[in-house]
Image (cartoon, rainbow, N blue to C red; front, top):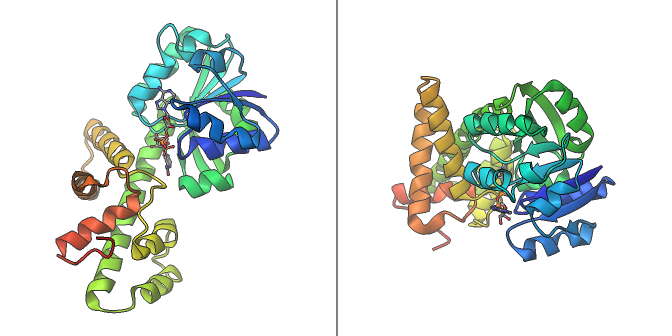
Length: 295
Ligand code: NAD
């Protein structure tokens, strides 16, 4: 298939590469030329603009930071909805507000463009390995048509329900993920403060009932003081804001999600917005007045 890919960041770059390696013709576009050039190694061709990429594609994928970015790329005279041919399938894989996703799906339908919301979980490592979990909202027939594309990106491609429901599923994922990360941070800070060998604790806990993706992938980085981003703290804060909005709409108390949002805000306020989410442990270390090995 001919695939247009818009948004070549931490996630978009490896995803576009995997699509090209799976044999699709991929044309990429992103805000900076350097990001477009970075995926040329895998055979991703350089697009000149959003409209250029969207006009010639069977499938257009967007992987952008937030809802306003997706809306800006989709709408307007130079937007993807104006440029795409009727029948084009647009798959937005960014994490955005479910209500906005449903509204954009209706706008797409009005101009003859089919669309899916298909946010992902699995981190940058999952994007590189092509093992993402993909949660899909939209028409079932469009999901079936998208499967050959999505299967090049993930190992679990799951139909959730109508437009917006993929995003709602992703917000549930973010509650579980963020609170697991808080649990990992607290466990490791307690190990550090107790004067036990934190690396040995990490190995032992990883082999037991408290094992998790967060512990396995981000625990070692916490202990090593490696805060390079796989997922930016500021994007995690964006997701927790979307979670809070959804919880308010659903009249659902989520005390844990509210707490972890405050702690991520503390990391961002201290200048850590572009660090990876494993920097959550720095907020706990500061609360314990413990010296941070990185400082
Ligand atoms: P990122 O900031 O690294 O990438 C976003 C890219 O979009 C950047 O290259 C940016 O230049 C580009 N962009 C922004 N506005 C644009 C525009 N108007 N036109 C063209 N390009 C534009 O972020 P990321 O980590 O790749 O995340 C992308 C999405 O995936 C976010 O919604 C995020 O919440 C979600 N997500 C990220 C992870 C992760 O681990 N990083 C995991 C799951 C989901």
